[in-house]
Amino acid sequence: MGLHAKGVVQLADLYAYVRPLERELRREYAHERPHAPPPARAYVDVNREFTLRGGKRFRAILVLAGYHLTTRRSPRPVLRAAAALEHFQSWMLIHDDIIDHAEERRGGPTVHRELAASHRREHREGGSDDYGLGIGITLGDLEEPFTIDAILSTPVPASARLAALEEYVRMTRETAYGQLLDIRNGTLDPGSVTETDVLTVHRLKSAVYTVASPLKIGAFLGGARSERLRDLEAIGIDLGIAFQLRDDVLGAGFDADETGKSPNDLPEGKRTLLVIRAWRDASEADRARLARVLGNPNATPEDVERAREVIRSTGSLAYSESRIAELTARALALLDRTRSVPATAKPLVREIADRLVRRTS
Image (cartoon, rainbow, N blue to C red; front, side, top):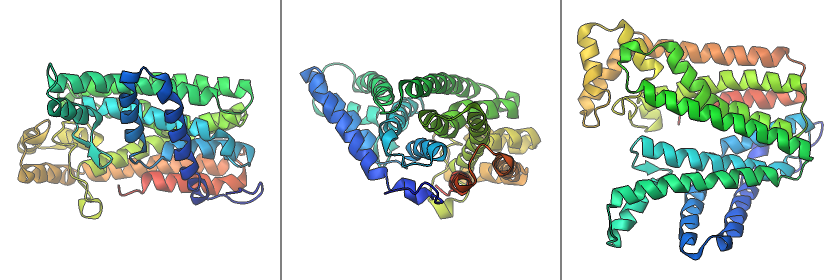
C-alpha cells in the first residue's frame, strides 16, 4: 500500500485502505465498549453493526485523498480522521432514516425500525415505535463523540488537528442547516420552491459533507495552504451538487433498468429539481398527475410512471442532466487551470469527479 511520492495515484490505490479503515472503526468501538455503562454496551454494539454493515466509504476516501494530494505521502497517518467521517455518516443516516420514515438501509433494517422490532419481541413496556425513535435519535447522537475523538487523536501536528476540527464544526453546522431547509421545502407547494431553494439544500446538505469538507479535512491535516483549500472548496461544492442532482435522477427511478433502484423520491414528496422544473412547465393535467404521487406512499406503480413521464416530457430530466454537466465542467475547468493542486494529483481528482457524477447507484 505504499504510495510513491512522485507517482500518479489512482482511486483504487486509496480504496486499498478500506480494510485498515474498517479495522480502525472496530478498534474504536471495542475501545469504547468497556467504558460504557454495562446496560448501554449493547447499544454501542448496535452502532458498531450499523457502521460496519456496509457503505461505499467514499467520504473517508476523500479525507485520504485530501491528505495525499497535499503531502504526496501515504495517507495512513490520517486513517483515524477518515474513520471520523464514517462515524459522522452513521450519525446522519440514522437521523435521516427517522426523518424519512425509512425501512431499510445498507441491506438491513434501519436502526430505529430494528430497535422497535426488538422492543416488540421482548414485550417491553411502552410503545415500540416510540422506543425505536428515542433510542435511534440518541444512538445517532452517540456517534458525534466518536467523530471528534477520531480527529483529535489523528497523529499530526496539533495546529493541523485544530484546523481540521474547525472544518468539521463548519461542516456539521451547514449540514444541519441543509437538513432544516430540506424539511421546510417538503412542506411547501411545489410551485413555490425555486431552483435556488433546491440547490441551496444540495450545497449545504450534500456537497459540503459529501465532498468539499472531507477533501479539506484531509488537506488541513496535511498542512495545506489557503489557495489549495479555496480551490478544493470550489471544486468540491460543484461536484457535490452534481452528485446530489445525479442522486435525485436515480432516486426518481430513472435508469432503473440499470440500477434496480426504485423511484422512492416521488412518493416521499421530495422537492427535487426534477419535480420543481416539471411542475413549473407542466399543464394542469400533468400537475395533477404529479400531485397524485408526490408525498403519497400508496401511489400505484402506474401513477408513479405517469409522474416520471411528466418529468421527461416537460424537459425537466434533460435540464437536470444539463446542470450536472455544467457543474462538472466548471469544477474540472478550475482543476485544469489551478496551480494549487499538483499536476500528478489532478488525475485522481478527475477520477473522483467521474465516480461522483457518472455513478449508476
